[in-house]
Image (tube, rainbow, N blue to C red):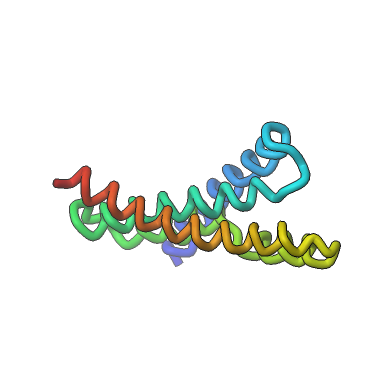
Length: 126
């Protein structure tokens, strides 16, 4: 039961951070593209890569800390469901090019970000 509480606390923090990005990104980047979702998914992937790299090589984090950070904070921060509905909305308004650019960009950049995070963690530890 303790792990659920750590996940819930981390989730609240992650969701609050995501809300901040959701409010700020459109003000800075405009409302015509789902920048906030793309930003949180890419940033979350980068942070996940760094955390996993650190925990694998140098930081003997407790199970509760791993749950808090990965499932909780990053799970609350990133959002695949919002990504999916953003894609569907662009697709249904027949904005096919933008929809597929968003999907491809989100996936490719998130994957690159997780590898960049792993590389950063490994580089810092050497």
